[in-house]
Image (cartoon, rainbow, N blue to C red):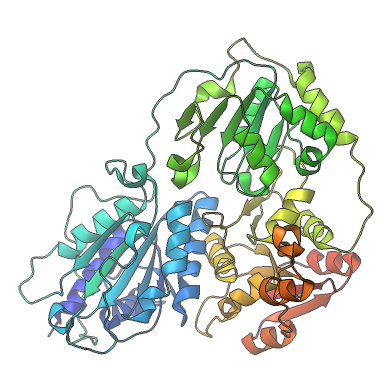
Length: 554
């Protein structure tokens, strides 16, 4: 005899799969048992008749699992297949552990489906074990949430299918909704389940037909046409932040303006790009050029450096486009804030301009060329340069959101158009949470090798992301850890003026951890290097499995 909870779970999983959800990340628990049993069948090598084939990933830690789901979604988008990814948890503290990844997904515009199991109404507020207030637990960090009543005998077929359709649509950025202006993001379904929670050997019925089922490409941010071109001023600058895309390069080249592109912008290429822009803005010549800027165009969301933020803040005229999920938080003095870059921006209002005909761009290149290159040293920049040099064109890589991405920003070249690797970082909130798991998810979604560069504190913060069970698919992932024995990024901030002992204890936080032993405990290959030459040799090997290269600085 079939159980209502089991029937509902099968219909929900099948409807989500029909709506384009391919990957599910599951954490073990009893209250979520109906979903777990359904996913065990759907994710099996030989699923039963009628069950959808899905990719199931099982992890024991909900925080790492949530970032694995985020990485799966980011990897799918990076490889041209944007889709929502679901994560399933039991009740209680398991739900709370999703919060860091949910916050990042909210601000970064990553579509996640949070399927959290809960006690039925009669067991709430009566002291039942593992019961807390899960309704609305994620607050404003989700695009939509629903508290779903426990399935019961006699329920009308199609309830789960309608729920799945709406959840996927909102997660992918349903333009009919006003929340966050239709941008993708997380959705929370809090699912009540009443006993029995075990398997019922029931059959997988056809998904009830619900009009308007979304697919992975059905929804997206609506773009209001803005045919007005950019002013054809001489002294403009294009700043390409996280997620800007190659169109930022086209805008800069069309106008003969210098392009200041962060490494995860997807725009760090071409003859307008100034790769050493950080050093230039810190020099007298660069400061003088910055004071002469008449027009600043920001594409994407720049977050890395204070000199760039000052350039934006001081802009006499500012235009912003494609600012991501947080586009409404664009600088308030911007004259125009657009959801996407209009085609009109990729041509000049007064006709075409060859890059060689721009004296303004030539001055930026000349000033950058006059900078004195530092002497080669074994430091974070050297590790970052070797890491970037090891990436193939179009190769997928993750940068840790602390010192690692800043090292890459200092040393990344201006690639030839079409030759750059795809660099990703969790810049929604720029935290170090879940970086290992995010990279693992990217590799699993891409089905290809992924490399990641992160500091030792970032690595240790999510070292549990190395835990992949013997029955789970292992990612092809190489993690390069910059081991400088603590959070040395604080050395460049105002906190470093405090007494050295205080800075070390409460900011740098040296850890004394044995990374080789940790890797061995997780069954992960480990290599220790202490020179640029040794690192280059280690990076020259093909990525064949899950491995860690520990680059020791001191």
